[in-house]
Image (cartoon, rainbow, N blue to C red; front, side, top):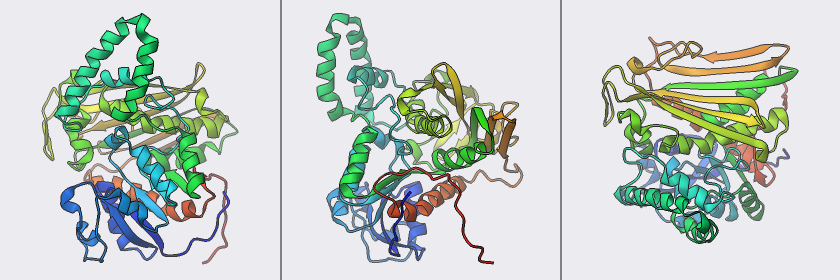
Amino acid sequence: MEETLVAHPIRVIVWGPGDMGGRALHTALNSPDFDVVGVKVFSPHKDGVDIGTLVGLPPVGVSATTSKAAILALDADCVIHTPTTPALLQGADNDVVELLESGKNVVSGASYHNPAMPTWLSSSQPALSVLRTIGDMKVTGDVFGARERQALSALHWTMKAVDSARPLQRPLEAAASAVIDRVIPRRLTGERLQSACLKGGVSLHGTGLHPGLMVEQVLLRLASLLDDVHEVRFLEVGDLSAAPDGMWGGLASLGFGTDLSAVDSNHAIALMQHFYFDAVLGNVAHTLFGAQAKDVRVERHVYPVPARVEVRAGGTVIRPGTVGAIHMTYRGYLGDRLFMTNEECWHVGAGNAHLGPDHPNSLSGGHLISVDGLPGRLEFRSEPEDGSFKADWSAVTDISVNAILDSIPAVCAARPGVVLPDLTPRYRLEEA
């Protein structure tokens, strides 16, 4: 990756100062490496508020704004982009394109880790296929409002009628294509994002804890120690009892505390996570096996696990027998060959942990990486000690924020385009 010198401090904008964006804003304001020149907020009561006040710091003389036009007009080197995941269903890609074309680099915690990978919502997918998937989506909690719920219900029955009218499929596809992106914008292709980078002379990078750090860097570096890799597995176990209430609209929106029948492979969390883990599987397939995005097939399987104990987490009560843990599995195939299994196993409260015999041996969570190949098998585990771990969600946020901030200088210095981690060895002179 060709790099140029970047002036310091780097002028940044924070887009969406929620849990992660707020932490990024707080850290950037306290760092001599960054000059925060603007913040895009979405709540009217935050409009015009000093950005220091937003995160509990002294005023700095810069006001937050709800105006996208005002943000686009700012002179900045990079935008720290931390939208909510549901925003990806509401046209966040178009915002990123406008930011890039305005001449601003973008480092995002959203799913831009491998834009070349198609998903169920990609603009390359048939409109009826997208509508069918959304019509079958199961939604819990407050991730969508009453109007959106009514629209999803109507769409579900409409698609059943469409599927029964086989002779009308072609004209219905044309009609659906004309209206779908006005209602539920399909995700833009990697080519479209790349062209926006080239037009603005800037770069786009997606990162965080996972996707980002754990697989795209740790797992792939570990795999480089083997002469030949056959199959890899990544497992993340987490206790969400300390997750912020606003994440996704609350734990109930993720499915926790609901009836077991509400959570399956068509639940909103399963479909939203697909955006992220498609990218992970695509990155692994390309790096280890030279595969292209079109060659990778991803299958998902999501199931709920009943709670054993009652847990109160924020505004959500998890009662025994309701959803206390969710196990999500995304498998990547090249033809019929399974090359990677990506698993997320989330629970609320240590008493509801769903741990298999090969999971990290901790009720608090952890990570497992295994790489099978020649000359043998490599394994990496992270297992917090249960006695000392307080399920502090801020630790997860801090790691993600650090990954975002640490990448900004390299992204700003890179040639225009979509930027991925560089795994080639780099060396520096010892300064001790």
